[in-house]
Image (cartoon, rainbow, N blue to C red; front, side, top):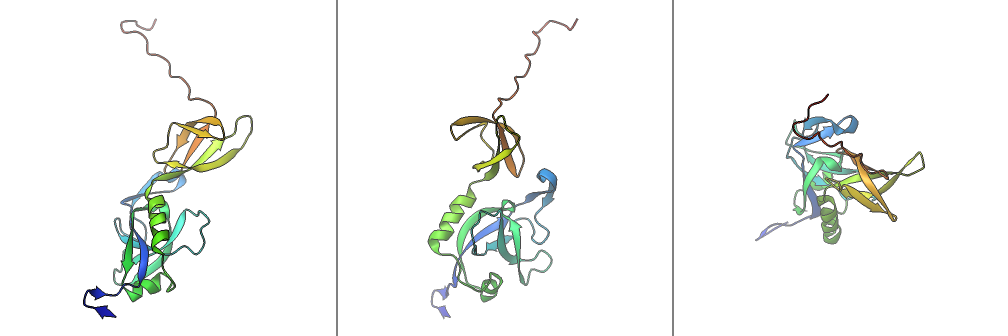
Length: 185
């Protein structure tokens, strides 16, 4: 139904853009432009989460890279999305691609935009004296060099596009360079 101010909104949705470069493969070292189904920078609409179990993937709807006339719905890793914001949905075809049900509430959408808009990495901590790794709350990207967790200080040991790993051991000290003018004997 159109009014004098324009078409009527069908609801609110979280919107994002596909990242220009996305990391794939072991450790995210294989860099691709965009995603298989979406071009880099493509606008996608994040469907309402039916359950929030902290999954790193989200359902999205958008116009396919090869056929920009129809909407497709797929699940993509959230780390491949950027520039999260809240927008109104006006297209019945888009609403159908998003599942046809109720969309986001304004409060919930704003909350997820704030959370997802902060770059975060999954965090693993090597437990001292044990031969296993624990999960800890996510850290910012890039990760801090030190992390306080459950009363102990951990040091950044390794990170990649997917996660940061911390160790109770401090980083090894680098040897000092020889004084200038001294040659190796």
